[in-house]
Image 1 (spheres, rainbow, N blue to C red):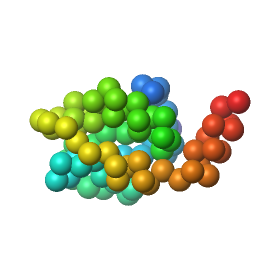
Image 2 (image 1 turned 30 degrees about the horizontal axis):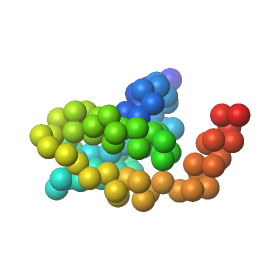
Image 3 (image 1 turned 60 degrees about the vertical axis):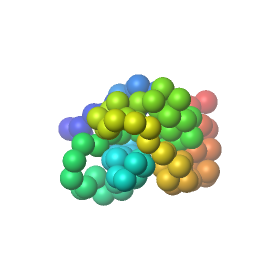
Length: 92
């Protein structure tokens, strides 16, 4: 049985393999692709909608327990447009 995590953006529970782990590093949110970096991490779907929603809700700092704003630009750049379109297509 695969572990289940909650997406910061949409707040839906999903298998760990369908989410991306992120951590706070030097005032920015960084993708932890291998899920091996030490420290507190958070999970989010690899879609623009979920990343933007987490940013608007200021969920990054709260989930990662960091004081102050965090820059999520690196996470947003890691989203592949083809994967986002494929995810959207699967929802319909």
